[in-house]
Image (cartoon, rainbow, N blue to C red; front, side, top):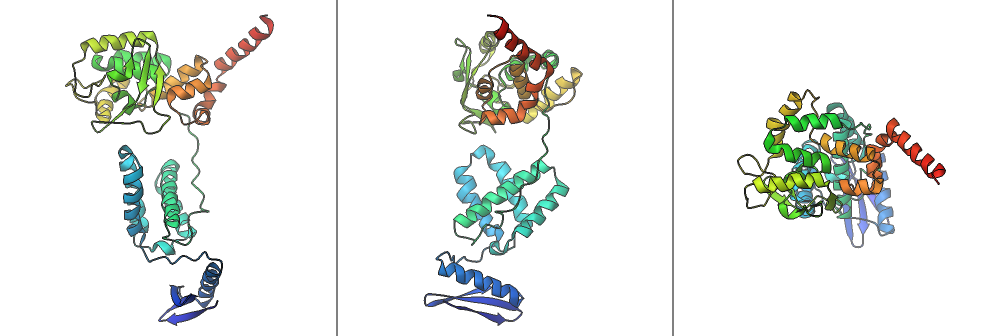
Length: 353
């Protein structure tokens, strides 16, 4: 089978014969480039790999992808983050033909974003773009994935902010009394914010000192946890069970049966809680400003200092894998005090016969 090169106006076209039909493929303004495109398409036809893709802009595909992937496969709680990145990508690539995108175009975008945002943000954006273009390839919209060999931006590892034990005590003392038990629960369980505010009394088995993480609260609604690993059983100290029992006696009934409510008896809006209660309490306690997530990191630190089994620790925090736990908190296992305790255990086992 042969093809030919034709010129119309200022552009060359690779013309490929497919059965009784002829396919015209726009190949740019140079004869050399047109010959390369012709050779590639002729080979694809001969090997049965040819794809007859229709012209489509990136924006047109993005609209299809949002409906087919984001709104059908992604949890509603994650939509805002996805849609925000898709809008950003559409603003950059929107009018470009999907079929004309190359690795060079994508690499230029990555370089531009690394000058504008933190590496972690650029990383999220390129990962999403890669997923979109991978789907475009599998769905038959492009012949090849132009992002296949583009490297993700390197994200420097940052040590997490941790609320130490004495700092946690100070925070509990300064937080508004209405949220005191909520703070204790966050510190002693490591629950994520949406898991804490989505905790219901059905999830709290206080007789057996267990909290079942079955819900997360988002925009006043309860949803199932983000991942399979996030749904878990968290063991709690008897002292916290006692605090929660007292909380239950004092709490007004509510339609969602939530453990923690605002002072007005409504579901907690996390951003409002941080603005009006958490940040002021940190300031009153003389502590450095940290994000609420520092309580979760602090809980991990407490567990490591308590020499909990790493696999158990990982499961209690709802991590996807123990590898993630070590990647996040591995440096804490190298703490001098922790190391001394481990050496002492070794010595006791050997000489304590």
